[in-house]
Amino acid sequence: MALSPDTECFECFKRGFSDFTARAGLPPEDCDRLIAMVNENLEKGLTPPVAGTESWALLRELSKTGSDIFAGEKKHFTKQMLLHYDRLKTTFLNSRNPESRALAAGTWCNLVDSGQGTPLPKIQDLVQTFSTPLTVDRSTEFLESLRQADTLLVLGDNAGETVIDRLFLDITSFRGNRYYMTRELPVMNDATVSDAEMAGLDLVAELVSSGIDVPAVIPEMLTGKAKQIYDSADIILAKGQGNLEGLFGLNDSRVYHSFVVKCPVVSRATGIPMGSGVFCRLAGTGGKIAYL
Image (cartoon, rainbow, N blue to C red; front, side, top):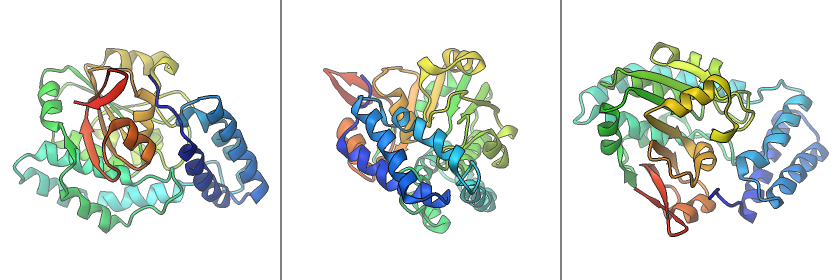
């Protein structure tokens, strides 16, 4: 049961590619062309991450400002979050539940998302959200499961968010196998392997690319090492709405989702209000998705 696209998905892509093509130095007619390609795929019923893949590939090819149009923002957010790293680590370690605090902060970092063509948050404003309770928080259950696991796989999302993912892996008591999966190619401000290395994630986990040109992890598309790691992981932490859309409806009890509800389509599908910070598992019940 994949996440069904809605007319709102087209409007979201339209806002996004209007910004993306401007960043790429492309004329309005290229924007119209890319959006038309997305709309055709949405009308076929493709999920949003897959529907935009062809347009992103063409955007990288046509771009006059380089294939990674968010390279500057990704570097900026990563460096700025690293400046907060030591202070945040101390704050979390001195709190009552350090690992849960770090997981909640990682959830709020999903606000660093360029996908809807909206301005990225200011670093200081983002950091201030870290103490805000999540609307749905099952991090305690996640940590209990993690204590029984041998292998953890984190499915990464945005650059900058990577720094807080590293912080959790730095302070957690889990000492099993750790893998961090990134995007294969630049798409929006999602992290690639090089972006994860900039955040220092290679110090706390083995980095692996998904190997697929989609801003989501879609299990049936994985091959090689990425598939082997995904299939053998005892517990999976899926970051962001993109990975939520890629895994939606699979009812894999290993998967915990960490995201902020940023669109009405996801809000309706999950029954969780817009703007909510969410850390939980999702499962299909009676044709609907419920959070656990």
